[in-house]
Length: 346
Image 1 (tube, helix red, strand yellow):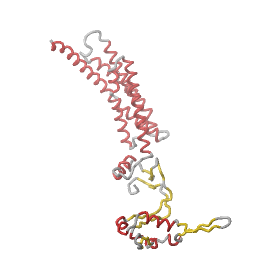
Image 2: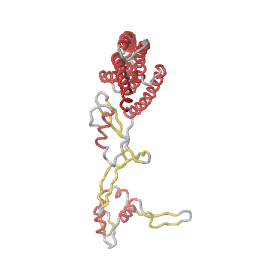
Image 3: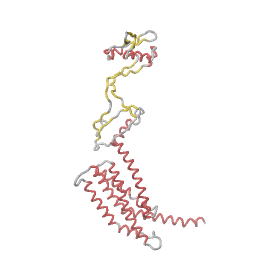
Image 4: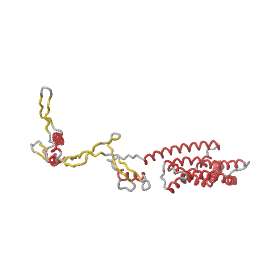
């Protein structure tokens, strides 16, 4: 990680302790010399921990006499290599013939999480150079397939993922609420789809604004998306309500036979929708670009909301009437199918 551009101040929580000697048993040599792992371990335990060979009892206490190597010998790796071990045949075998001695730095403190040994690696990211998601992908590509390493991430990237998961749940709940309210207003289960289908196009404006200004896709952009849902729905309702009002004035005949009332409704709502959007965007732009004071969090949210609203409004003016016309075409096709079906059965 320290060699990755944009990753700074990389460190870990390991505490270096005293130097250690890692002994790797040569099992082939043990079997040839008639020794076992227990013989090696017992000899090393006596050499370093000692063994009580006798004791002296006095009137008030008992003194144990422990036999072990002195401190200088215990710290000498060359002496350790030549330490003899007696086998069952009475032969003395040097320790370095039975084990591989590998010096390594010791660990002063061992950390655990859920009963497993862990090492925490942390650092600082320069988000202008690399994002947290990119670092996670690179680490997964290098260590993700290893069975000996389990990776667990924390920090801003993980928190961002959790926040977006919560925002997604909030968006679904808001969408269901919007659908139910529109269904009650228009007394129709189909008409809410005409209104709701304009929402994703507003999201395109939010995403475009984020990349245009070089902002990360953060929690504030997600909050702007949820707020944008309500604003876009309001504009769509205004247009759909006018179209349905003009349609209700058709006293007789097929309301789908002519699209004049749809055109009139779209034209008549053009100015109110544009003025509503324009005043809202003009109110957001000073905060978005720091006119009169700059806040990085509010700025990103206002930029996303402004561009999403502008893009979504332009789409609404064309999309909502088009969806309504397409719905009328589907309705007429279904009526023709129903009228043909009885004669076909005859």
